[in-house]
Amino acid sequence: MKKLLVTLMFGMLLLINLPISAGASNKVATEKEVLINFLEAVKNEDINVAVELVNDNRFGSIEEQKQEYKYLLSKEKLTTYMINEGNNNSEFIVDLNFDNGGITKVPFKVLDNKVSIDFDSLQNKDFKVIQEGTQDMGISARHTLCDWYFSQRRHDSSFYSNCEFDISGTSVVKLLLTQQTDSTIPQTPNVTYAIVKPHWYGDDVWGSVYVSGTKTSAYETYISGKNDSFKGAKMRFSVHSLPSPAYYEGVGSLVK
Image (cartoon, rainbow, N blue to C red; front, top):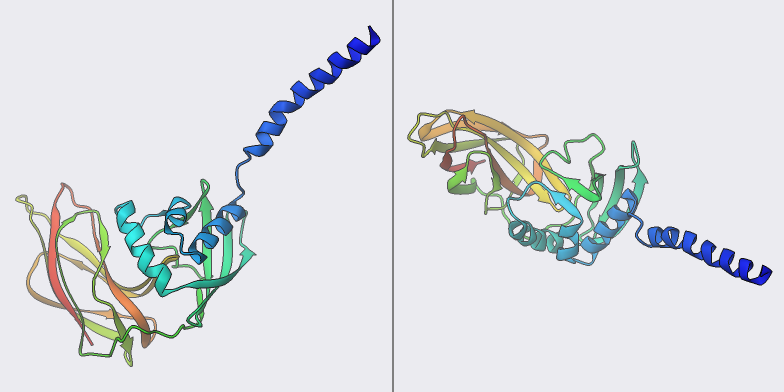
């Protein structure tokens, strides 16, 4: 009888411990572990895993994000990184080292088990370019730095130019542009034109200008930047929401 009681008690203890073991095997990754997994995916250029671990609001679709990541991860190949603790358990400052010699200090935030990136991620005092990497893009300083044309762009979207360019020797550049909507209802189009360097970890913004109103002939405005040297830049267009749905179109040039 005594032996039977001991056996039953042992069996009950095993049953009690089963849920604990199952729970331990399914434990949710910590914020730091999520960031490490993301950085390792980036380092290995594993685009599918990187996209699964990040919530990047700069792109309108997963396919667009994967296409841009494929380019950015090969352009800025991560070799090593060091994670420093941030203001709380979900914020980190990471020292990134790239194979082109670039060294950057980047703030990262992890929310809901994903690395969070948006257009303003690098508008942060903790973001610092310690050393510029060498560029092998064959980009030369030209009088006209970038030309663009866009149409059928939603009234609440953001997107980038196809052209890529360098700025050197000036902290002010000129824009010549047109912008309008295709709406039959009179509406005032509003566009923010920004010069940025897109990275897989966010956009480094050199400068921007907000233009309001329909411009059917060449409208001239200027962007003042934070320094007189900025390499590997693109134009970023943010077309703002209107009272009713509309699509934007525009054409322009960036002139040094």
